[in-house]
Length: 224
View (cartoon, rainbow, N blue to C red):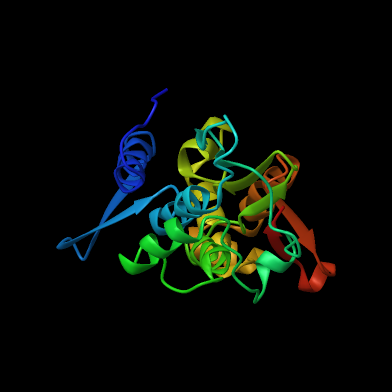
């Protein structure tokens, strides 16, 4: 737990540093040369959520903007509710900008922390989907507006805890990228027999990781 203070712009920077200290980051190397870093959540989307909370919060409330980090999700709590005329559903499409604190929003716009009026939530959705995560969830509970980002639970660490073998872990990664897999794809991917493929796939179904769709002759396996 950490309480952030300072000017609003300093607070944004310190909050992002706190978030990075408490998130995992995966580093990979392209062809063994270029290092690529991937955080559990897209940092630009998180920054957008925090910026929106600072700019649009209800400053007459004694509550604080809160960032809560859990094993499976990140939440940003913003004191106050949506302006009249805006709904959660409207935030997911083109919508007008209705800043509650116009001077603060203008300052953040001038230093380019806000790129375009009324596009913040759309950018968050786009960034999360591009990152391979579900769409962020928006909730208006009258006293607070909450943004929830959920991470993909099918990470290698989680899959190993379920007792999956290397072939099955490799297959889950494949399905995440390709959207589905067939038995023949499984045999080719893992260089195994038909019998082994069926056994492994059935185990993934029993563990509620994959589901089978289609007929016996044209069966595909998708993430459940």
